[in-house]
Figure (cartoon, helix red, strand yellow):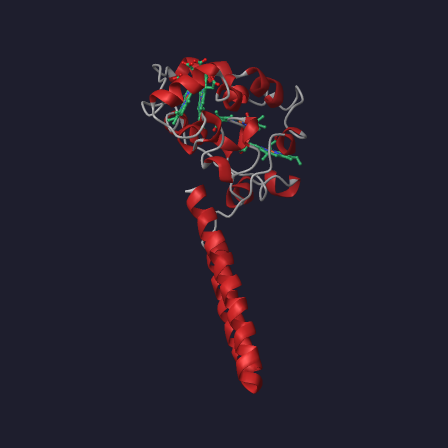
Length: 210
Ligand code: HEC
Ligand code: HEC
Ligand code: HEC
Ligand code: HEC
């Protein structure tokens, strides 16, 4: 999805460039009609640009540090330390190992594992190489959603506004398990049986009751 969205944006930019070139041509060729045409075309460009932002979900990724400035203390639940200790933090690095090269070769991939969308989609953030600093592996935003529009204190404090800003929340344990299985599934070339209860216990990062 992310990759698709980025392609759309690139498409819009390319469109704008083409239109800009067209405007220049029109200006040279048609002297006095230039203003009218330009305004018309600019309105068209504006409409084209508005479409993707109205379609929403244009939230940008901000990376781990932008979260852990508020979510690392013992009082908050040690989210940074727990994540750093988990395999998720090293998920990108794993793709640079000889073992990953073997797995990628067996799949017949043309590019190295750490440049292949087929691997990056689960070892970084869903959406792969178009989005943010992939070296952070499976990071906070891989699960919680891109944070640019919910990370501000005023937004975070009000759950509904954070959700509007792109924070992903889950109705219950089953929904959490389903989200894990978005990556922990048979499409993983090294798939092992996924035991949700055990797996969740090993990475749980709850805020302690006050
Ligand atoms: C400026 C401080 C700040 C930043 C930065 C921040 N948060 Fe928060 N976050 C909070 C506060 C405050 C709450 C409300 C709960 C609380 O008091 O701990 C919260 C709540 C949450 C919750 C619980 C939401 C719920 O109700 O289920 C999650 C998940 C979360 N933040 C993830 C993140 C992620 C991921 C990032 C980075 C993209 C991030 N936060 C950045 C301050 C922050
Ligand atoms: C974006 C994809 C993605 C999501 C979502 C995801 N994981 Fe993972 N997880 C991975 C990858 C990739 C690895 C392997 C990392 C490595 O070894 O380098 C992994 C490894 C793990 C491990 C270590 C397993 C082992 O065999 O050592 C645990 C535990 C784990 N994940 C738990 C969870 C839980 C619980 C959830 C849901 C709350 C979850 N994961 C959601 C991609 C994901
Ligand atoms: C593999 C997926 C995954 C990763 C990676 C992950 N989280 Fe979470 N996080 C969850 C799930 C699932 C919950 C539980 C939500 C619930 O109980 O509804 C949660 C809960 C939270 C909460 C709420 C804690 C509470 O008890 O109020 C905060 C805050 C949070 N995460 C922040 C972070 C930060 C910061 C990072 C990165 C350092 C991070 N998370 C990485 C899946 C993840
Ligand atoms: C559908 C999600 C998914 C995709 C796609 C994926 N992985 Fe993984 N990968 C995981 C998960 C989850 C784990 C950890 C648990 C496991 O091995 O089942 C993992 C673990 C690994 C490991 C460490 C475990 C081991 O057995 O050595 C390597 C290496 C690896 N993946 C390489 C790759 C390569 C290379 C690609 C691309 C060809 C790839 N992965 C594509 C989800 C995925």
